[in-house]
Amino acid sequence: MKILPNLLLLGLLAVGLKTQAQYDIVKTENGAISGLKSGDIHIYKGIPFAAPPVGDLRWKAPKPAKNWQGVRKCEAFSASPIQSKPVPFYCWTEEFIAPPEPLSEDCLYLNVWTGAKLAYENRPVFVWIYGGGFSSGSAACAIYDGEEMAKKGVVFVSINYRVGALGFMAHPELSKEQNNASGNYGLLDQIAALKWIQNNIAAFGGDPNNVTIAGQSAGSMSVNCLVASPLAKRLFHRAIAQSGGMLSNRIPASLTDAEKVGEAFQKKANAANLAELRKKTPEEILAATQGGIRFGVTLDGHVLPTDIFNHFKEGKHNDVPLMAGWVTGDGSITGGQALSAEKFKQQLREKYGDKADEFLKLFPAATDDEAKAAQLKLGLLSFAARSAHLWAGFNKSKAYLYQFTHVPPDKPNFPNYGAFHTSEVPYALHTLHRWNRPWQEVDRQLENNMADYWVNFAKTGNPNAKGLPEWKGHDKKSGVVLELGDDVQERPALFRSEFELLDSVQIK
Image 1 (spheres, helix red, strand yellow):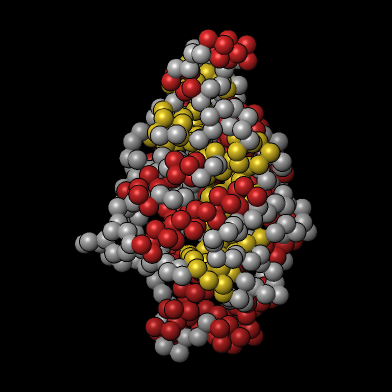
Image 2 (cartoon, helix red, strand yellow; image 1 turned 90 degrees about the vertical axis):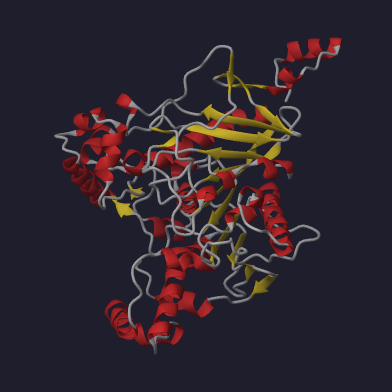
């Protein structure tokens, strides 16, 4: 990629000098970088977008990266954020998790894939935010590779952000030193990355005025939060939320409750105060989170409004075109052993009172097996589907909803987990080649369709194009949801009755 000062560029053109090294150098606001090339795609990995959040910068908003001299090699992923050692578990094989090493508190780096040959080509920008329950994850996961999406014409960017205690701990001392708000440092990292993109992506051929943020699970929740945050205003122009949101039963903690978790963590870490916590090694911080203390997003009144539901309901969010959806297996990750039919009925009566009979019509529990299916369905709606439904309803901009039902082909000597949570990501990002399965023609076709939908949406705000099954925008009257399965087809009024019932008991 030829990104050089104009006079030098003209001079080189005049004498016909076009070396590979010159194509590989990009000038960012902090200094020049070089990367790798794969075919027509230029790849830059491990670009710092903020200063390392270590020492006195721990539990603070990210600061700008320092400038450097010369050309910095950006050819390998940076360290992933500090987290428990990543190992495959349940349905998530090594393709879905962070590399086991390196892990570091110094993790605020991003990666760029671009097919642009010149700066200022104004290609749409696609920013990927990983999941991991806000306690794990990495931009270096195999299934997040951006090369194939870049071939389709977007500039693909993946970003790291702090997770766990280092990314999301709120604490009274932190609130006192930081404008009466704390926590959400991982979200502030994401916002810093978006600001870096605004200032630098044109040099990679990207259009800072056409940025799509996308993520799955905690990444999807992050997208929901960025759309809610006044600090992220005008930093993006479209949003893709895959399997997760904050508008249903995932409402974040209040600042008061989150601060109490922070105080409990301080006690467990054997620290007398914040200053002592900042002196702990990252490994000591990680060790103190073991045994049940979890951190997540906080309604702090600074990064996020204190009432996120009404913030969306009143149209105060960053209203942009939306693509949102869920996977049928999302309901299985809500946790806990399935209740017996009798206990499930009792739970509904305790929670919903005189509406329990209405729930039992839509979530029947005549037998234990039927009750288990009802709980999976309710878990699916509560975890992902209903948040997408509510968000689409609150949006003035166009919204497109989907349900992913396709079951990946069996892997030899590995259980079949169905259409499991995260299984849609390699289809959407066109990375099936990075996932070890015996792919069939139906998988390849679905991958092509989904990646095209995602890229079209990033380009124009509309996923449709010639040759693709039509995807109609969502509205309450039709309730159309696009099913992404062995066949791609419309599902009018999918879960309409269930959504109406759940909406009737929403805590306002």
